[in-house]
Length: 186
Image 1 (spheres, rainbow, N blue to C red):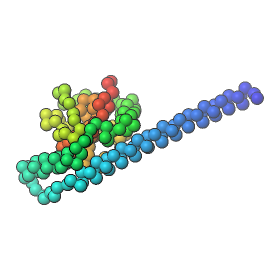
Image 2: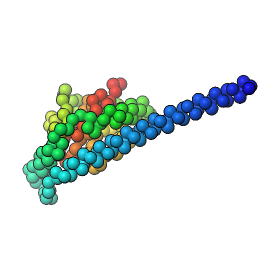
Image 3: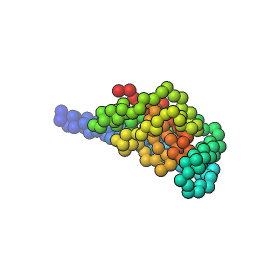
Image 4: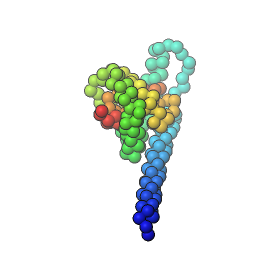
């Protein structure tokens, strides 16, 4: 075999290995996304079983009362809820990779700048299945980052508290789950 043939075969072998590794990584990513979506569906299904009948109202007092009732019913539906119920280790790893990739990408500087300009947060302890702390602003997640995370149903939102990614239930005001250290330091 000639030198060129050897180099060509070696290059093809390396390309094959690279494509194989990429395929495995892609399968792991789609598996993590499916697991995440299945767990979200399970959460919403358990919550729906506890739903209270809501009547249209403009009264802030009645809206607050409905939100409190929704929170209580949701908590009852998940009495043993804990961190990692939605963000399992595989799902957490996927999210951290997506976030890190976004922050390293061409829009990463803008995302970091957006996060830095957010209202300063006190040192806070988040708890799954507990009300989002009243003293914390609901910091929105930068759109560029949202584009790289799995879509959520309309009832849920991603929120950022310091370096923590929070899954927030808007109708109940509860923390569904969270990933500490999801936003790497600059």
